[in-house]
Image (tube, rainbow over the protein chains, first blue to last red):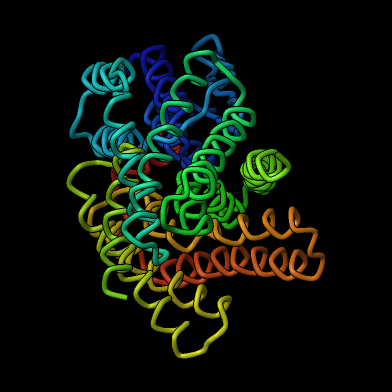
Length: 251
Length: 152
């Protein structure tokens, strides 16, 4: 077995999984399983939220170690699912190492579609306002707010803005839009359901879930880090709403 | 109430598209999210406190998610993350800020406590479901975990 290729494959898989927002213990487990295919004496992986170290060693070879720092993190469940099934097939012998390498590289090259994200964010905000008992007008205003928020998120991503700032700005956009529509343009409907429904795409649901799974699987370092992430995201949303509403009410 | 449940279904389905979920699991995730929200609404209407209602609907969602993940052989998070979303206390976060702006101290502390309770209950419900499923025997594939001492 080509150990170098195996290490490259495992590293690329781990990198993609971490960037797609997989739980830390799952990344570690997937990489360890892949590396143990080499049958070498030492195959060790250490993963944290922001990077990982993987090493292969044996008396017969020069030891190989790779360190990767993960700088950008989002959520893409589809990629996690694909890599998970590739690693499953690789470990059960249904897939050759070369094929696995090429498939993972193919996943890495797939670009994200911003337009689909724009539409679905609009639908999410409208549907959540409906979920929390909004009227027809409130749902329409929430759809508008969601559309503007998605545009704002996209712009922030283009300018490589920090996630704290982009969440804060998006929440501010939502609250300003809702306030303008209900109070100043005096459209029928109250402020509360619009804002509550529209901030739902920003709330830290992913961070809470991953924090729980990491903590449960004994990865306390990542558990604490992700809990912190949840609180920081929640704070960003709250400050954003506060800035929007506070400024406009002061006028 | 039916409208709210339909709303939560569409919300979860659309959120799956944002998260880039695999296409063939989106419908299942949507139904799961709607079921969870329906249970939450039902329990809240019976006068059960928000925390307990969140706990039970969170349990329902994460148990379904664990089951589906075992069947589909995929990470649990693919079902848990979208399914749990309607329960995440976005409303609580908004009410905290709104009461701070109105400078209503008692209301602020009430909503802070409520938001923390709800997030804690979500966490506990996921823990319960995961622990229950850990008790089940896992079928081990012999080739999936090669033995370490095999190389000579």
